[in-house]
Image (cartoon, rainbow, N blue to C red; front, side, top):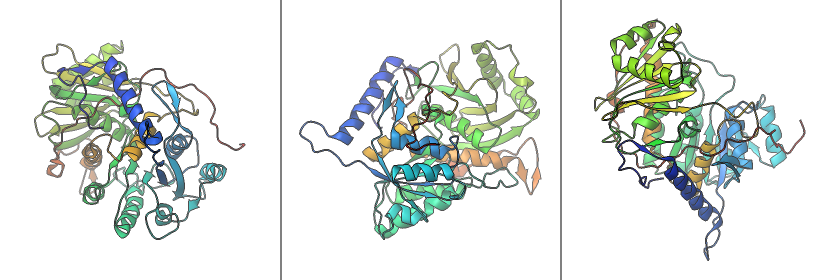
Length: 440
């Protein structure tokens, strides 16, 4: 989506009424693309290849995402049929992915032995209209620094090989961060620009239900920001960082890039907060918003903070916290009280509409429109901040709770967001059993 939001002139927020209009416009555009309008001939439904690490449980990301791309998803208060067809699957850890084997067998979707075969449908040339990479979950090791060594880059580079051999490319979605390694992530982003294909991905949380249902307007004069949420490991901190970037990219002047990143863990977290009163003030505001007692977050001895400094002087931090879902708090120039927006709860346990729903909608939108739903630079920055956060506590093989401040000139990335609101609104989905197409 590239159209400016109708209320972007509002210096603070875009209201719910316009969210509904924007959401309906997106749906109308998607329906027109898929089904045709008036005398236009119907457009062919995009055919997707899905390359995943593991599909062995209802709680796996592959199950959340692929089933919705096949069977539809919950969007803006109603079940929405999918606008794409999955025509091939590659599963890296196939032997333990029994659920995935059953689903593919029930849906008559072939499982290929290699990534290359999945995107060529066993031929020699690219034979699909889009690629979905879900490199999340499975039996993979972590390294000393806590990186989960998931083979996202490994699958992505094999897709790129087919693109280059076929001399054409198609949109790619990559779940969560691009890679645990900055150099690989930057290569992935650069290839999308070199080969001119839409790249999207990241966390599903920025497009989850919000309370209140508002979006920051373009050019909001944000001074400082925090995000509170589950941030105990690499995967958790990425969700929080991607939420942070989804808000701060809308600040006055646009994104200017990241100057430095630092990780501080344990009791040292609260010493940092004491030295930075702006963060303490925002923490207290979130506590008051949830009707918690003042100082409750500081009682968490296992807390950690990811400190982010931007090139334009904006400051931000992600702080581990419980019982607040994922909550953004922003200090905005000219506004007496912080703006606080929370993404709360799951519609579970593991029902047909559990977890990600808006994200599959935007995957479909990307594949149909061949346009990025948001700037892929945001995904790269979220990936980079996560990577340098994981590196910060380590130097020459030694760990320090108060990590080193890492200057990040490689993240001097500028762009200006023009997207409208993209999060779910209206009623939450019902808790209904999965409809699989086969018996247990």
